[in-house]
Amino acid sequence: DAYLPQRLLDKLMFIYNYVEMARVTGVPLSFLLSRGQSIKVLSQLLRKAKQKSLILPNVKHPGSEQGTYEGATVLEPRAGFYEKPIATLDFASLYPSIMMAYNLCYCTLVSPEDVHKLNLPPECVNKTPSGETFVKSNLQKGILPEILEELLAARKRAKADLKDAKDPLEKAVLDGRQLALKISANSVYGFTGATVGQLPCLEISSSVTSYGRQMIEHTKKLVEDKFTVVGGYEHNAEVIYGDTDSVMVQFGVSTVDEAMNLGREAADYISGTFINPMKLEFEKVYYPYLLISKKRYAGLYWTNPQKFDKMETKGIETVRRDNCLLVKNLVTECLNKILIDRDVPAAVQYVKNTISDLLMNRMDLSLLVITKGLTKTGEDYEVKAAHVELAERMRKRDAATAPNVGDRVPYVIIKAAKGAKAYEKSEDPIYVLENNIPIDPNYYLENQISKPLLRIFEPILKNASKELLQGSHTRSISISTPSTGGIMKFAKKQRTCLGCKALISNSDHTLCSHCKGREAELYCKSVSNVADLEELFGRLWTQCQECQGSLHQDVLCTSRDCPIFYRRKKAQKDMAEARVQLERWNF
Image 1 (cartoon, one colour):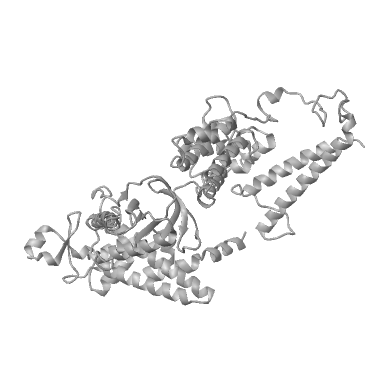
Image 2 (cartoon, one colour):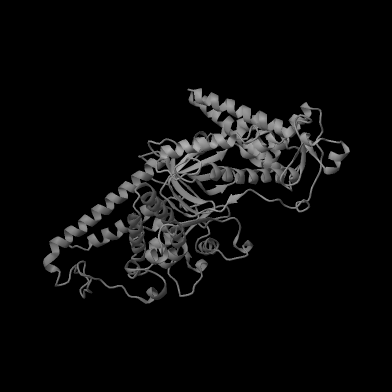
């Protein structure tokens, strides 16, 4: 336990990143752990102001006094499954570039009255799309643009050094430095728009976003006007989506190489229409590409026409911790079949098989565990939540092992009376395993997997809901019998035949009269079953030993976030039950 935090620090390079961030921003290391982004920008402002013999005002603004401003543009997506390459054009450091190009700063902002009073000629001021006025750099160079220029220039040098570095330690330091410089540059815009911050100035932040919106619209128009059949190209280009600092273009070509060439041509052409240092860059191609809605898409990511780099997803349930693992696995496998294998029917069949396994109780419990954080005590929650109510029930059972505030609470949804709320049906997975409590498959089908699946398949299938969630694969349901609680309190256990499960009147017998002739076969089956379960448990145990770093110590891990933990517990329980069955053979 003492060694693990050190290993995490080394793996995630926290020390390098924090030291470089402190060096770049000029704040104590402790501020990076206890303070937000604003103090970093303020520190850089103070440092630069001191060099210029300027004083920053100490002004406090109530959070609601300055109101809000319009954010970035998100072009309406043309949802669908695109089987032709989609080129992505990105603005390099969009918001910092805008602030540098148009000299946006506290000390360059002037009111219309000041423009008239100082008799400033039109060629010496910038009128932003949001209606604000800033003087150009030939009259007064802004402090914020200077800070940004230094940060981005330093990042460029750090990235160049990183490319040439050979020593792992040097690489870690340089990577931490360039990351710190990038975060610092991107934080400046947010600092000016934080109305509860140290030095808010919505005139700057609203001007930045208004220029950003203008540039996205300008890029869309230029692409669709230039790359046309009339202009000598094979197809008419179409911008299918745009978000904040990038646009996605379908040039109509059928190969990744052609899309890359057209993407580079478009980026160079459009960059020539912008003020330095604003620049549009060709970054990647998605092929094929599944566009679901705003900020939700998936595609194969290509930077080389020979082979795709990876499958990239955004806004899709492949990374969320508050979904059960089944959702992540199902969505990931479907995307693999659709995007990599290009086999939509296989993806549909995989979904049907998974739903059938869920309804027939063939699903591993570890795939159904949902985990949520307990941020406060039960009384402090206004609305009853499944994990909160379960924590209270577990506290009544055993206060020593119950989750505390700050812990993550794993739970599954079990069968209950019709109309019961989700918070009444949540239960501890270990308790469910030990007592063989039936899971509620309909809850998982309706509340966990149906919406993510429909989001993926609706752009592809005409009637996705009917094809995926209705049919023969949903008509058979198997429910396990609980070993405790409910009517089982009044049930009397009786010995049954190990072959056909018929009741046996004599408690000393193992088989009924009908199965007596198959004694050798059934005994071998019992022995084989125990051996298989012992092998499964041994493999899971070894996997846990390897995870904890020792093959010679008992497994002490009780991580409820790990699916292997539940599989190991279930294998242990099944193995114990199989051994009891084996001991019934009286040879």
